[in-house]
Image (cartoon, rainbow, N blue to C red; front, side, top):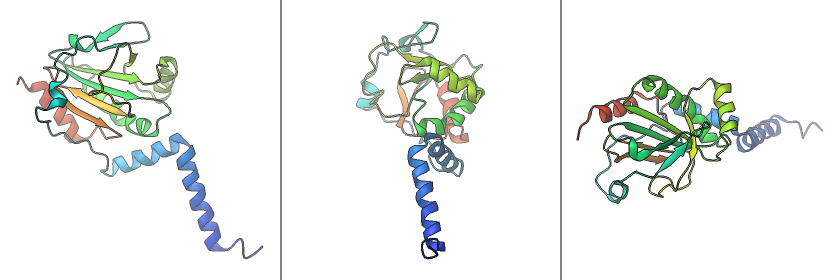
Length: 198
């Protein structure tokens, strides 16, 4: 019995237990990713994309629609002259949960700015469950579900995916995976998009 309970076996068991928790407990994985975000990993790249197929394929955003819990429809085509922060996420997705505090911080900074619009899209279309999560965490982010076809150039199915459109409706940022959207660099990026008339 003493051979089984030696220091090396106890450390190995604890390590394996830690890995199992990370694998099977989404909130534990989200907490670890959030910690990595705070030390500087997962910072979003904010270089403006060159005019490519990515930006030219979605010249007209009309008809790309999202619906809130009250049934109100938002059409991306009506949001010209606004910077749009569009995020696809789900409550079961650890990277989504990890980035949510930073998304909420960004939202808090711009929520009263009529030139910046946030659309948080619940990929499961279970707005009641998503709202319960938001309420529990104290987040005020506006929740929507998909109400039309979404072009693959905007959302390929990976969660989380964040897309930022400039005031002309062009894709200025499109990334899958968790990122720290409350970073000074990203906040400055949103401010630059807001100020730009090009």
